[in-house]
Length: 339
Image (cartoon, rainbow, N blue to C red; front, side, top):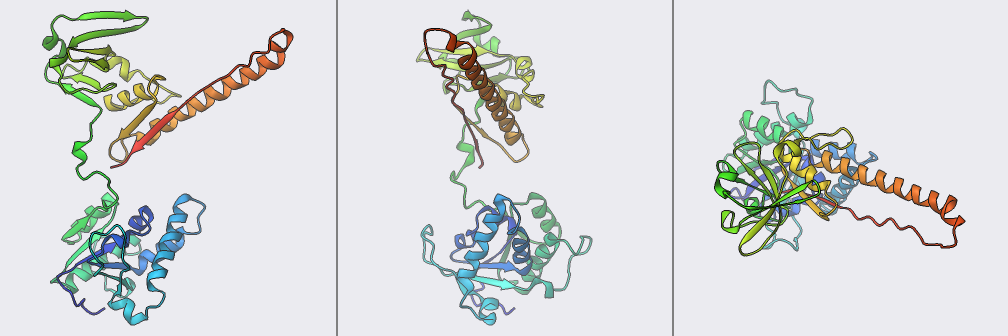
């Protein structure tokens, strides 16, 4: 492949998981050159025929690439076909889409299995980095381990695909809890306490924690105190005393929290008074597993209640003179926020 004419442009090499995550991701690099290795097309081809949701994304990505390249000659595909304009782009398109046969590139990476697709894509990016030394060649992948391997293989620039991120600074998102320095009760001193059934509520001064939200959790450094904000006004905050021990003893269908953060998540999800729960966090922290478990419990419970109601209507209520219907309203709002 000949060197690109605009060497000051960045050259992005896309991994298949980027196109599976957002099939038209190549349109997000409007002013730069986008490289799709042949290995990426092969992997999309293998995925498109599977009976999974991801197969649909693979087919959309393939159709999108075909739409851009359908009138291009082999020579034009190697040198770059102009990217179509993207309505979301802030500037007009000046970049190109390039298809390269990475199978022809000599293997310059030692120590990695040569037949793996990740290895071939990394090798392609390293080869382009050597061929276009005046350009900034960047491998874009959502695979953390692949980014690490690429760095270890000598690739200077590796990035995650974050164009779809709706929030520019994820640090602005509330964590859902606050941690108080030291022992919480040493800061509070005396406070009014109420007992409602098995639940204990405390009314603490508002100036202790100026910025709070309803259903926000409170922790301290003692590893014993845990509470949830129930309400607040200008002078006081009403908190529900939970304790770390109680949070860690939550269980649902045999699923138990592994840490205090999962404990807070399960506590919120199991509370019928909370209509909407949004879980945020990195991959692998338990968001999907916990929400799937809670959903299963609600579904099974709803089915059992409706079965009992139908049994009562058929065998008991019909023997009486009234015909009141048994209603089993239920609402469930569970969500995950990936940032």
